Length: 302
Ligand SMILES: [Zn+2]
Ligand SMILES: [Zn+2]
Image (cartoon, rainbow, N blue to C red; front, side, top):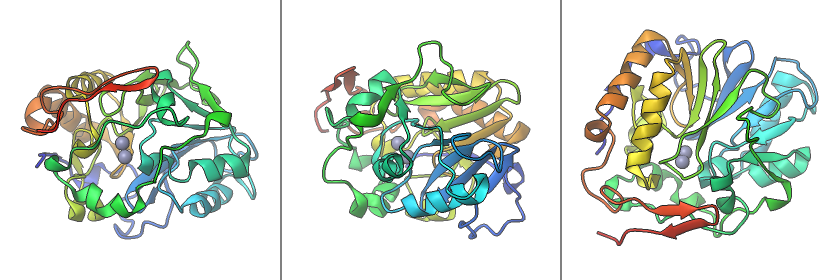
């Protein structure tokens, strides 16, 4: 069972007065950043409210069956029938791509991802098998939603630009943060030190079904069950902590801000192997390997 570094509700980036169970709302956390929780996973809207058609982006695309909810939230925030300029992917795990194909089709929007993540988005490769021995909260919750085959959005898929600019996100850069997956990326805006990290680290425990639902705030490493390279995951967390973010938006758990969040992130980075890395399990000592064609080798089952 993974440990977490304690956080308090005081560090929530949205209004802590909002009912903790009221998760139908879209949580605004900066003028032009909002996130919405869909059951257990967040999607992020970047753009000014009322921005209008093609003037904003969506980051990640949630579980299957949530396209309607995401479109409804987008219409409310950006204007009726407003479509994004693009959908940007932190990574391609099924809980982040579930509604991707429907949304991209309905919106006729391009999808951007890292070169090393593309094999999992264009049908060429499957991720390394998850490790059910390291705790199954998220797995137990979401296994009925497991897709029968890898997603294939190759028609719309584009590469993130080599210059690290984030498409249609003025002032933002993408950062390669591998470990959880090979082509995992985070998005960073130095101007106000905002950081969108997907599952590079998360702010609630994913290994417990209870915590995954109630989202008690805690700083955690990437969800254990799906992480296949722990050395890279540690280096990515260390690189993100070194940015000294003011605001973090994670794929799971609430967006958090301020000095307590930063302190917890630094503890996670410093003591990562103690706090976040499983003591046993398929990938605890040996990573899965991948290249631009997808998964190339996985360690044997324990
Ligand atoms: Zn993931
Ligand atoms: Zn996830």
